[in-house]
Image (cartoon, rainbow, N blue to C red):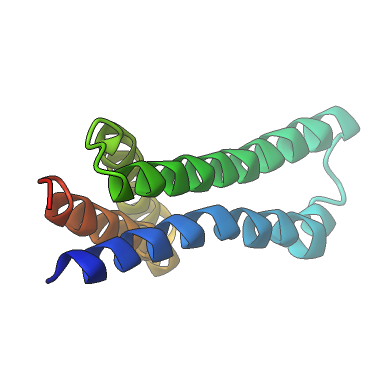
Length: 126
């Protein structure tokens, strides 16, 4: 895998992580909030806060990964800890989600593995 391919893959995964925030938030608006009709108002508000907090975290991870990609393109390998951290978080969360909730959550493991592979290929200076 060439450096250009690895760089493109890294950016693609970074964007998919960040854009995933909008799909996640949309699920609350379209499906989840309606399914919680009988839940106490304070519990509903708490769940809404947590749901959108997770969406914001996904967006923040995406922004940090794009920043990391930008730094990597300029030769700075010091920002790779961001990719390793997000990759580990997504790998563990995806594995737990897949085991506990179903195969959809394997998407997070795929993102983590692709991100880690691209970061591994970009870890050395060109």
